[in-house]
Length: 112
Image (cartoon, rainbow, N blue to C red; front, side):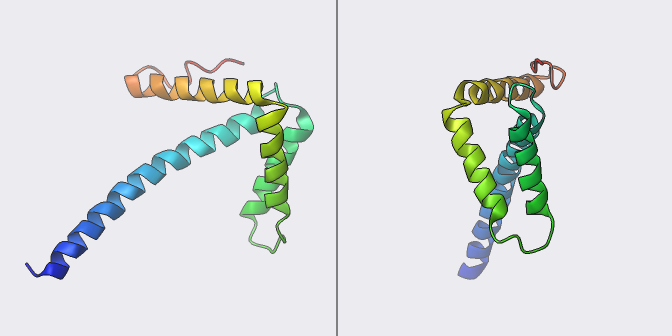
């Protein structure tokens, strides 16, 4: 096999592995986003802002960075003011994922 064939094979393997890893990270990010938008421990305006920013992100119209600004403000609030709540939400999601990997029913560790 020529050298470029081996190179193509290596690139294909790296692409498949990267895709699998990215898929797992994307699923986790979506679970965290859903939990943040629906968790009653966060104030309603913050949950609404998360939903609006994500809705703006999905709609294919020019938004001039409004959604990014909203998400940065929400991220700053989650990492400062609501840090204990955010950490407990993350802990619950990781626990639920670990239980679903072990074979337990999915969502068994989520409270609330």
